[in-house]
Image 1: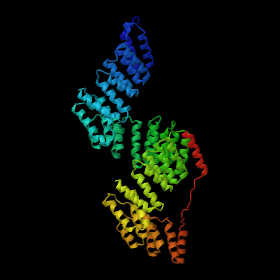
Image 2 (image 1 turned 120 degrees about the vertical axis):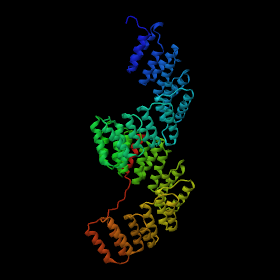
Image 3 (image 1 turned 135 degrees about the vertical axis):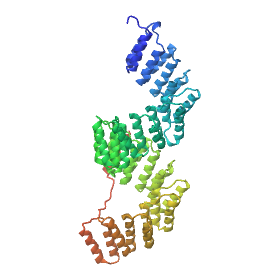
Image 4 (image 1 turned 180 degrees about the vertical axis):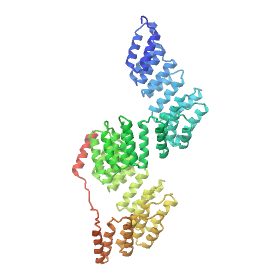
Length: 609
């Protein structure tokens, strides 16, 4: 062109910015600045360049353009001011975006929306209240929100307590006559799913026009709130409608399979993903590892883990949790050592999982090393970590340390109380367990099923029959807890240990469900202590009816016969045991291997430093 004017420069800058060629757009802008007064950049060129900086997340370039806008005197222009707020917002510069918003003399709906989006997506937790205030303020100023504005502010409401406020915003857009397009419908369903408004989701799903995003959001909403069959129905409708299914929908479907425990369906979904996607992303593979772990398929989880090219901390934590959930605690400890050696960051969830492994193996040396690591990482005041530490020390028998951590906790959850009560009960301090339950009631902490297992066990060991019966009655009358088989077993053990076999039999006959072998084993063990042969034979018979391969009835009956000098009967029971080729599992003791402890200690030292 022999002569270039402002329009030609601005059009080319705008096109380069829109196509993401920010470097070329900046070069053009610099060339425009070097021109004369006739080629002076206007607000259109500056706003286009700011939009390009926002797309490229180029904060430094955006700041330079901002400085040029001030020098050129166009910073107060409505389009430039709005573009400045949007640029800083998308570059995660919350403070700069807020400053630009305050200095904007005339704020358009796009400016208000950009500022709210910045506060919601990148601000501190308290910034969401500011976003809600801005939404109310723009309504009072009669700046009417668009669909994008509503989609942005709906992200604020993400917990059940905020459901009424979310409904008010929904009512506002209905009152204003805003057309709910698929994008806004997706935002509404996401809001209701996070707040637990399943009735509203069902009604909304019938009224909006659906696309892939809205269908996927509906699937995620059903899966998140436990509506598994409805979620499966949405996935089936997507398949029947030939809708393109992305990997986030597959991830939600795997969540359904996990809650149902359907391993076969998990494998089918995995195969579907392999067939339809060229490459599975890390998020989906992490979900696959987690689901295989919950379904007990360790080998498939390991295969999925090994196929990951870019293993992140979540991937390692998923397989570590898989080992812990399936009682492969030693493998979990060795796996954690590899994590530390590779210098991977240990999340709170990872720490709690490895502490569970230490509890399962009663590995005190590893437990205190992990505790040291927790202190170095600065997560020792996290509630879930404190609960895991109390449980670990209690399981390892170091009750004094468990009690010290318990007393230092600011928020004591039911898990902490249960761990300590069970620990006192298991390690011969039943009086302390009962006293702890009294403290628990004083602090208005509602007990659960596990609490009463530890409490009834303590009463059984101390012979407190009346107190145990009272606690058992309180389960239903005071705390509305339905007794489970563990509680019935504790009650039978309570009566039998005290020698009150008639009460134990009456209790078994009055049970609303069929007693399992643990109930009869508790009775049989007390029969050995008290030498009750007739009742012992009955209990042994019941156990063998339930589990014919169990050798314990023959062994205990032999002990009872020997205690009352019935040696012929003892020999007959032993012969029956040998004839059926039943063998008692060999007992074993586990000691911490010093070499393993030193290895993990060295790995922890390297990883922390």
